[in-house]
Length: 277
Image 1 (cartoon, rainbow, N blue to C red):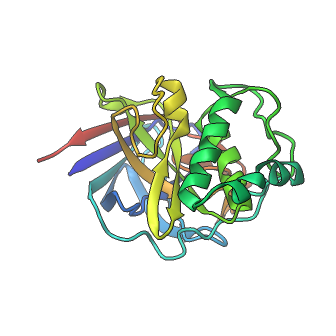
Image 2 (image 1 turned 180 degrees about the horizontal axis):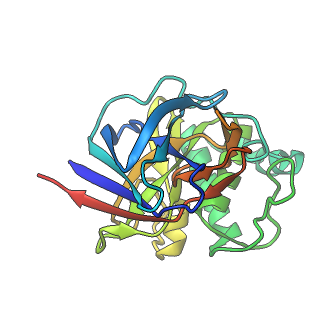
């Protein structure tokens, strides 16, 4: 058992509402419940054209932080129904050039496992790990090819891989959540990874951690660099119909403040994990 606490720093606008993901069972960890401190008016929302859910509330005292406590336990249960139903948008659709670039993998591979492995190996040569101000797909209506070597984070790499895999007819889903270093019980921001369904088996991949932490032995697995992770949401380009209007979030793990005009702002958070016996 473990508890992940997301401590949301106060916002000066008392009219702001907090929107945060309702965690799901990813086949490895299951959220058994969520407790809130300094929050009221909780309601549940479901993303348009997706199964991902979110919770909506306000701070009881806007001068104090809101604490969200997620309680997890190990799980071997199946994924939610329609887990691999993906939205068709600029974050998930491959461009014509990308479709053409990876199409050869379908003919050359003798199985889906081999095909996805080759896709990851090719992407390993296309990306170097790093955070950038401009993503390789900014301003594009679909996911483009990568020219030369691009610097990118987990978001960039998984955007490319998800679109490429979808174009090959592979079932894949983008998962956003948190990862905790083996020697730490806190983290500063989100992380994302991919789950594939290959010949009926759920296969996780995290290319970003291979590159960030120098893990040269490229192979599937949740934690190639060790540590612990927890899932918060699945899907890309999620839209929630709130009382302030439609709220669209490209990837969703950290809470956001939503204002009456429908605009939103990423919340400032502190994220920690505590293991229990």
